Image (cartoon, rainbow, N blue to C red; front, side, top):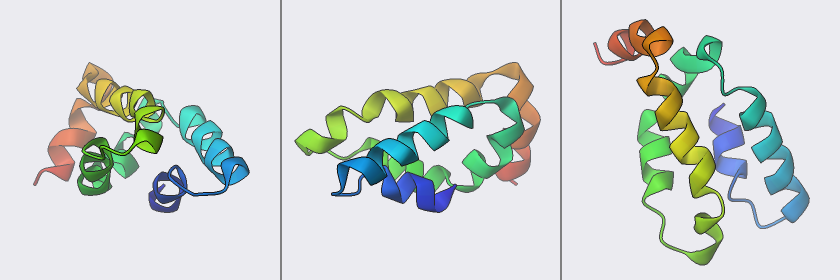
Length: 81
């Protein structure tokens, strides 16, 4: 998941779109442990202010919303230990 998150901001449009599609497929509780493992990167990406980051912020927001889900609670708590 780390490399998909990085490629979400790639300068090549096709790479960005492929990364976005791959991440959207993974917006399910089964991938919560991987997302928690990448929280530092996800938080950093959320803070980006450049124009290219704006169109990707909804996906980053979706990751945080997923992690708030009760189904992901165990993964979040385990990742914070």
